[in-house]
Every structure is written in C-alpha cells, then in structure tokens.
Image 1: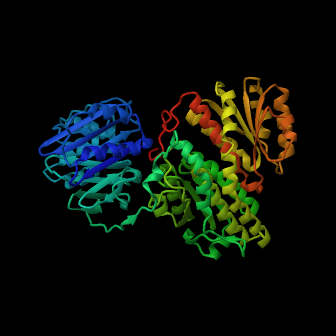
Image 2 (image 1 turned 135 degrees about the horizontal axis):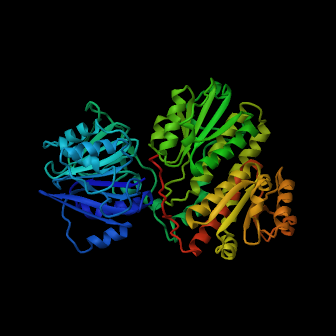
Length: 609
C-alpha cells in the first residue's frame, strides 16, 4: 500500500517527484503530497484526493530544490484528509517523513511523545515516526532515524529529509518494500520500480531491517540495529518503461487483459522439453529427489493469487497425484499448521511483497517446509527469501484488479505440475500433449480477445443489475470465484462465486429474472452435471450467460447468452475461461462510469495487514 518516491541529485526534484507519484498511484490514491528541501527551507505541500489535485495545488508555483520526498496514500489510520496526508513534519517544520506500513505501538509512542511536549496534527500512526526522529536529531539524520527505529514495532518503508542535514535522504525498511535507483550523480528511493524506471534501470532492493543514506555523491546501506555496513548487489531492470504505460488503451486493465497472449507465452517460453514431455524450471533449487520425495503440498496466497492456487490444487492432484491444501495466507499464519516431513509450501504473490503471504511463507519455513515462490516482481522479498521459485514474467501490472498475473500464475503452476507429474505417474505422451496444449494457449487467447465486442454487447445488457451469481465446477469453480471478484472490485456490484452443485444448498433462493447467472459450462468431465444446474436456473427464470466450448450447440437451449472459447485440456481451461469474465467486468465497470484502474478503497499491493 501507499507509494513513496524520493530524489536527490543535480536536477529539480519537483517534476521528478510528481512524475514518480503518477506512476505509483495504483498503490494508493486517497491523498498525496511532497516535501522539498532548498537551503534552510522545507516546503511541504499536500492535499486530500488524487495526484491530479496535488498537481493543481502546485501549478504555477516555484518549488526549487534538488532533494525531496513524495507520497500517495492508501488510508489505514485516519480518513483521507489533508492533515492525514503525507509527508508529515516535526514540530520545528524542518524534518519531513513519508511512510508505508503500520506502526503497531504508535499509541504508546504518541502518548509518550505528547507528554514530552510534541504536538501532533494528524490522526495517523505515521506521524509518530517523524516526532520520534525529531527527538533524537542532533544534526545527523541517519543517526536519528536509526535510534528512533529501535523503539518501533510494526512495518515500515520510510523516506526522511531534514533541512539541517541537507542534500540527504534516509530510507529504511521493515516489511514494506523499498528500492533504490542509481543514476549518474543522482539517486532515487521508491516503493516500486515504475516510479523511477524513466530515469534509471540500475537498482538495489533493501531487505528488512536495513537503512540507506542517499546523497548526490553516493549511497550507503547498513543494518538498523547496529549500523553495520551491508553490501548490496546492483540489479538491472530488463523491461521497458513503455510496459508501464497505457500505450493507447483507455485503461491499464484493458491493456493488461490484451497483453495476455504475450504474457502467457513469456511464462511458457524456454520452460518445456518436448522430447521428454516435461518442464524445465531452473529456479526451483530443488533436486529431482527432493521433488520426488514431496509428500504433500500447501499453497498459500491471497485474493486473485489464491484463486490461481485453487486451480493449482486441481492440477497437482490430477497430474502428479500429490495431496494439496490451499490456504488463505492471512489464516495460515495465525493457525497452528501441521507441517510434516516432505511438505512443500508454494506461495503465490504478484508483487512478491504481500504481507500475509510473506509471513505465511516464513512460518512454513520456520516449521521445516521448503518454500517455492511464484511471483512477478524480480528482487521482491518472497523471491529473495524463498528456497526457490519461478517468476511469471508478466511485466508490470498497474491495474489494481489483477488480470495477466492470474493467467501467468496458472501457467506456471501447470509447469510445476508437469515437472512433478512426469516424475511420478504421467507418461511421456501425456506430457507431450500437455506441452502442445500449453503452447497453443497464446493463439487461443488471441482468438478470444478478437471477440471482445461480443462480451461488450452482453455487458450492455447486464450492466444495470446489482447482483450476479457465478457458477463453475472442478477447475472452473475457482474461475467463478475470480470472475465474481473482478466484478466486485471494479464495478462495485455484489457478486458471488459458487461451486455449481452448491447452488441448491442456499443460493438458488436468490434466483429470479433479475439475477444474472454466469456459468462456466465448458465440455469437460462435469459438463452433464453443469447442464443440470443450468436447467435448475432456467426453471426459476434466471438469466444465464454461459462460457462454453466451441462447437457446443446444445448449450444454446439452456442459456440466454453464450460466449465460446477454444477447446483445450481440462486443467488448462481456466486460462481461457477467465478472459471473457475479465472483459465482462471491465465493460460493465466502464458502462457504470467507475474508475477501473483505481477502484475505491483498493490498492495494488497489500503490504500491510
């Protein structure tokens, strides 16, 4: 949550900070602000509302200075008001701070600081940090930050500047991501790479309990606890800045839906061995013997990634014959999970920074499980802390509602399943058929996208409804969950996903002519059962939109609207069946004049509990 950008160098800070905020707005857009140091003056400007409001506020004003920090907020403590917007300043108005995370002991710290005479102007937990730094500041900002953080319990990614220690940004991380960009005589601090990619591709990633000091002459990293120097590896970002642009599309979400033919291809590329009918995944860091000896798999994730994990459960049990449990990461970490010898924990997170998923992975490893990460962001905490893993190679996903990451996650899970299945029961011929089906997916996705106007036409019919029911069976049940989630996220329509057979155990009471029912009814082992469910809905005058397999003429007798997708292996059907549901949600949201890329109350990366 929240977006942080900092700059120190030889250029004017203000335009760099504002541009960086625009590229981070998907992380939060309740309020925004910036603070720039120039000589002995700290200029802090902040507003409630989106970054466009901040741009209006500073339009025409001169904000000189070559060192500054900025922030776009997703509210946790305190509503999105100007007072609660970041940056926060100390009592003297000479120190400014931006923060991403949650300070768990802020109430105690605030009470203590108020008794010492500090005056607070916001309702946020973040403000305690700048007053705590003020308490220890004696001319050296790095030392003050280091001392202050010894008292803090919680998560944070912070950037701090002080006019009495000029030309310097101090950043620190514990549980909330921070990346440092390295330019030519200039340095950047950000919560995510897109904020700085137009200026540099050279980055380092801070680990938890690390601090960085940036000046135009260089950087230094150290541990927070004892100020020991830390050597960091400089990494190069491989993707182009254009991949974080809309490129002519009306919204990032639509662009990312249309990118899926390519991103699925990228997830597969170089990872299959046709002759052997198996997958090649170099980053697993597991020997063949360790994979063969796996007795049980736990998949843990949140949101859309959780739905991908449910599909992975079907795949692994069907192809590899391994018992699998899929757990919400937020629940797993607070239970007393049973981790036996031979347990493999697969954690899935687009950002690689999801707080609950990261904590669940750490708990599983602490109890003896080996952990594999499936994530998109190179250098993220899950990627660094997992025993091994696989990048999905989807490129930057800016739209808050995940689309291309989901399909790439499912493809990567299918590759892991193929590898483990071939080590157990899957024949070479079945492996080769699976590879052929995987390689056909990008072209099949493209044929679906070419029919987007048909989904748009259907969306126009249903866009005024306020309730939807999504049904699926087998591996398409998670697709029903995902389709309902997409609609909820961006159109604010109440939607529920159910296993189709469970409709008779309660939800059927809701069905009337005013309740659209979206059914994934592809030709698979559950097809006849789904046809029975369609009859039950139709008998109660429900309006049915079916996602069906090309060539199925029977389904037209049951559904009011039918959208066809190409045939594929049953386990891979979700990669295709989810795309029309993504488009349906998108077009309905647009027709209801919702902000598709920045839905209310949501942010892209959930890095706080």
